[in-house]
Length: 426
Ligand code: GLV
Ligand code: MN
Ligand code: MN
Ligand code: MN
Image (cartoon, rainbow, N blue to C red):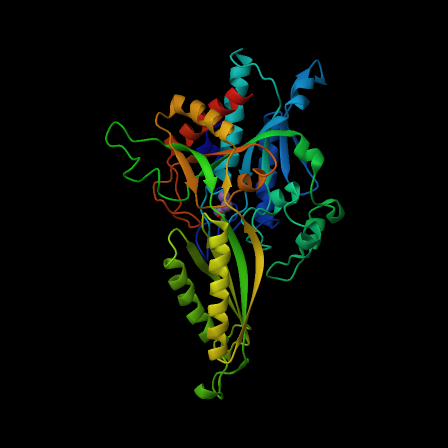
């Protein structure tokens, strides 16, 4: 029923961001709603039964039926689930998330054809899942849907999260037909999941690097099997000063939080660069109220810190906080740090990873195991069900940017690999 490229072409205009370039598909916006409707229609066209659970996760079920009755095997082992997310960062690429969803639909087509021809006998149900607010672009906490499902965030805290316009997650989800009182750890939904496999565009340049890239007739593996997700977290640093008039306030009379924020950004780079393996980013900074002729009264900076050792992340953040307080005090301001979310390093299920490697290497010889620096719903679900990932080569090595890319042939190689991996697990 179409290649991944054809599936993605159908949503190529949804959520385009003319100002930033790329796509801005924040969770529960009209773009996101359109994408969820697209997914529902594609799943229904494949005869899958689509449900939205209490946490806003879409599940498209390819159940096992025997004369209209669900076969007991489907409940005994739990279903095999694949999928990803459809929301994006502001100005993101076309593949981060949607590639995994489109590939899952295309893999269902491959598997159904095999079942019809008698080449595949399934022993359990298969579902395609779509997780909301994976990027945390709207409410600040990444993987909000999977965290709620897995009980990894207190629903009361989640419901009080606010977007940039001040809307609470409770109000926004209610407006989308969800019941805030039912959100949180969902043992029933989790109980149906036996294993979860997420296919994702690679977000670095490993598969395109000289280590793996071949040459001429041998282009190197287009698909890798995930081994781990780097520990990471987000913090909001608020620097407060004295809002004032740009023309009447002498330079020596100012307590300008923007001047402190600029120095804090430099300190973040300096401190993180001194810790091997650490990554620290200030990707978002908001002066309040934000006017050209206004000395800001407050600046909010969002800090993203990652490292394989959880203790190193904690230590680095503590030192950054100390440094920020010193800088702020020197400028006559104050700095306060608030944790928004944090996740330790996750190693995927070893037996599932071995099974994925074995399956994928049939069509992608030499498919390597790859650790990722990006966060994923698979990283959250790994704490509650056996979970694994596949990565598809991104020749630009760039992600969270419109320059993210996947060649059509590599996308199809990803579907082949996913279909084979799922077949072996069914
Ligand atoms: C999401 O893609 C993240 O890694 O932050
Ligand atoms: Mn993603
Ligand atoms: Mn992303
Ligand atoms: Mn992500």
